[in-house]
Image (cartoon, rainbow, N blue to C red; front, side):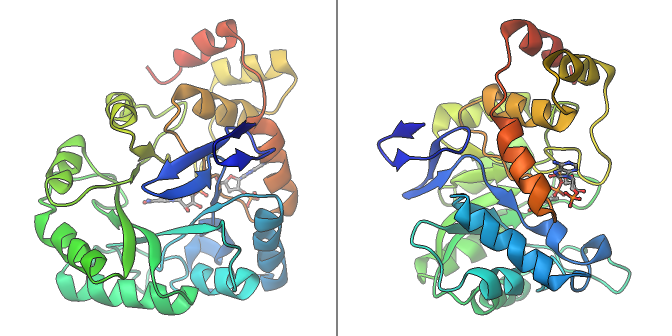
Length: 292
Ligand SMILES: NC(=O)c1ccc[n+]([C@@H]2O[C@H](COP(=O)([O-])OP(=O)(O)OC[C@H]3O[C@@H](n4cnc5c(N)ncnc54)[C@H](OP(=O)(O)O)[C@@H]3O)[C@@H](O)[C@H]2O)c1
């Protein structure tokens, strides 16, 4: 596929986050940390190889967070890819920490956010972070909490030149509006997939505004997507359900960016091939009923 940004063999072509062009087919690095997203991976050599493959395959959007490990995936990304290719954009998140039990307690006071941004800069080995998402809510999902103080802290770090663009994660539509009154955002990263479609309206609104929507758990996360309608379409197309789920997301809206996570070099390639699957109007109508 080609457009004004050049060409890519990756499914979906390109999207622009503010002034940063990325391939719509990206990569989510969370699965590279150890079990429960804590500690180092069992096979660090494999994790580095996956990341090098990501860059070699032409993917220019890597999603990460200082909380993965914590501080494990960012250091793996640096070890594998620094100095980074000019085209590569690394999107990170702040706003949650890790506790001894592997939980994700919020850390959105100004001091914690400043510390998190500086740790991300250090661990990734960059002077400016491409995109920083403020991660809201908790592991159970978004919560209707005020975002002003936390988002103003990040906007201040952006004015200081440490962050190029801002985004939100695990956010309600009301929080998106509240944050946008403080500073522009380029992306919202929320839970969304064929079976979890609470954000349908938000996706359409963001698409209208030219803001990216980046679904996390595009494949269901820790519990793989399961649905008889998905299985039926996948069987008809003689493709794995994962391929159908990714191809559907790319078709769902032009502002959707994919960040499927994998710790497998084989799965990485399978997912690229899978997202290229062509879905007919009949397939789409059948799939559309799943999460409604
Ligand atoms: N903002 C947030 O709060 C938040 C929360 C969660 C995640 N995220 C981001 O979203 C990204 C994606 O989410 P995710 O990785 O948790 O979930 P996901 O992409 O929905 O699914 C990842 C799971 O699918 C498996 N998988 C991937 N490709 C496969 C294939 N071709 N065949 C079989 N299994 C396959 C992976 O196992 P293998 O490793 O064996 O391939 C892994 O267990 C994360 O990496 C992270 O960057 C953000």
